[in-house]
Length: 270
Image (tube, rainbow, N blue to C red; front, top):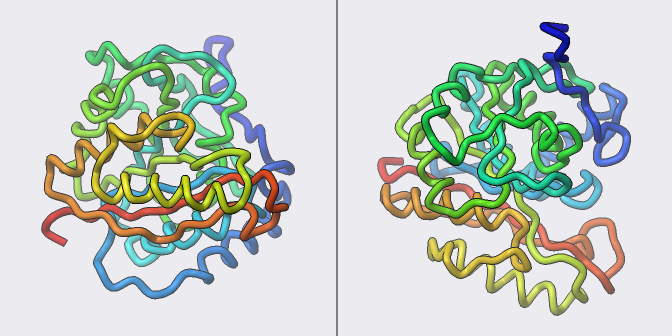
């Protein structure tokens, strides 16, 4: 405790979205990473990954995170953005915590990086936005495996716009030791065939850097995705699809599915 405020955000979703037992969690992550094929295009600057329960979207996320495995020693910071699901926030919410906990241990928060954003009006400091937010938490065990030495810069994206997101990400784009991760699912609760059509259209928009075509009914994290796409396009980056599936393909029924996609963004020089 420090000044009456907890400095570690506890794991809120362990045992529901992912295993609470450390050994079971390690085995699950290892399995998801092992399911990915070899990569031949260098290392991504940014990833877009889903954030559902691991039985639904873990394999899709794992294929993207596997692209970072061989780069672990060179990743010192992960800028992690995802949408807010439970708490209304105007802007992008940074936590006040010093660490985020998972069953695998604590992830250090890059307090200096967060404090460096205080001059931006879209940045607010709000622990409530993070307390029960699954979009960011479910990414942490993957990051603990593929970037164990990296500090985390987590931002919960609320009521804002893509330009404001891009302005934040631009501060870290040029740092070769920083990787950006955007957490987002795709369409929600349509029939299997309808979801496939919708998510295919969303994938096309993403792959053409057309963030202005996205909306909340196409991707819950459309704002951070659109901000990343705008910045990536400005910097001449390229994007590659890693996977595109839905819960009907993984562990759920096909009458009401949720879409999951993963993409890797590479800098122009790689």
